[in-house]
Amino acid sequence: MSASDTSGVFQHWRFDNAYLKALPADPESANYRRQVPAACYSWVAPTSVPNPALVACAPEVASLLDLAPEACQTDEFLRLFSGNELLPGMTPWACCYGGHQFGNWAGQLGDGRAINLAEIVNQKGQHYTLQLKGAGPTPYSRNADGLAVLRSSVREFLCSEAMHHLGVPTTRALSLVNSGQTVMRDMFYDGNARYEPGAVVCRVAQSFTRFGNFQIHAARQEHELLKRLVDFTIERDFPELGEPCEAVYGRWFAEVCQRTATLMVHWMRVGFVHGVMNTDNLSILGLTIDYGPYGWLEGYDPDWTPNTTDAGQRRYRYGQQPQIGHWNLYQLANGISPLFGDTDLLQKTLDQYAVTYQQQWQAMMADKLGLDGWRDRADEQLIVRLQDLLRLTETDMTIFFRSLASIETSDAGLALDDRELLAPLREAFYRPQELTGGIERRIAAWLRDYQQRLRLQPISDGERAAAMNRVNPRYVLRNFLAQQAIDLAEKGDYSEVRTLLELLRKPYDEQPQFAHYAKRRPEWARQRAGCSMLSCSS
Image 1 (cartoon, rainbow, N blue to C red):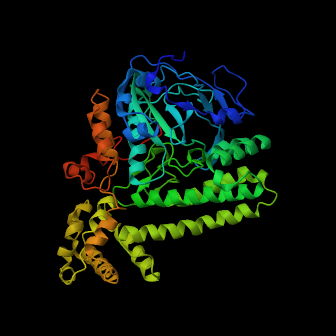
Image 2 (cartoon, one colour):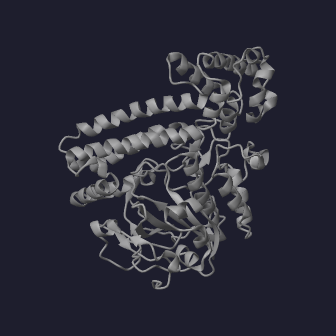
Image 3 (spheres, rainbow, N blue to C red):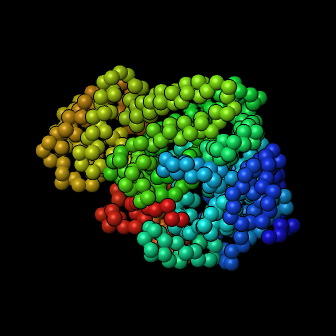
């Protein structure tokens, strides 16, 4: 692939490529599947595609890269982000990393379908890595083709931006391109492979470094290379911690633990389930990374996982995500332990993770309920009872918490009978006919205790509702909404992808023109492929 020498759209870009300058490359330049020892990355170029078409572009991400909206509609943009052309100064690479998958060490993994184009510095001095996902094979592709299908790419593109606008730390997505070629995939690994439209997503992040980037060098006893990678990561992404040394390594690990705890709290807040929390899918920056078989809770169920591969074990179910975050940090601690003379600090930092998470979770739940802080054990019991109530009958988590803001604490609100008290919440229940007798009485009893707790606060119902609506989204990317957009996109109609992108830019606003997107999952979507659970096939 040759580099373009006529690209006015990108002529202001300044490439940094510090990762490449600081760390060793694979000496083998040929692109074939292999083990890559004693290197952090391999040189590899994207594979050209026959007939690319732009599906969508995220304007906020373009702005981060100093690109005007009209630049995203140019032929130069399409050629670059389909993988058909490089810019002068681009020397693409794929990273080497390992990881634990579903609790077991998997050895070398690496960027099997991701190719980094460049590290750029924008006009504000911020560093971003541009990465194409689905742009062809790399030395880390193992037995795969390095390509991606449109359905998984739509989901990654939309969710990356949806999470950002929800306030959840995440990698971003600049563009989604239909590659114009078909890709063979067995969606549910059941022997029914078929050709699907292919696609390429351009992902953007300060760094795509994962826990597994460090683990692979520790596993191979490449301790000097491990130290070089840790030093570079601190210098580049955590400069506020100081010059790398053992004490700074400790502060760095503590920061990674804190960011991971914060990320888990955000996931729990919005009801997001990652689905594949392998150590190679956790970001060292505390970002949500690698959107595979993810999902949002429809009916509240802490044991739910969106991943068909995990249907039996349910290792990565919603309610266990914080504990898996801790387990993954333990594996990272093992990986970096050769840099420490005394590993007691690592254990103490790991122990602090649970404390940090619990404190942040309590503050988050107080915000979701509109409480003025976590007061005492009574608040804890109020929330424990609520979690039990949400499972009495199938209850939509997103709609329930959003509707809870409508509960009144006035004398008139306290005088409502049980049915009237539950009225603002009825849209959240998938089987409203079950709200009779004991279930209705238990929910109403909780609501009355909730009203009394709210009356202890010196703010109005309106002020409380506004605060709650800033943390409880009106709109999330439900799987069935994404699947409807995918169905149209596979026919060449990208309008629904673009509509969802626009909708999800303001997930906390009412947006009455989009009110039908806030409804609970319809019955037809309960078991339909792509609308509930998904496989890792992409």
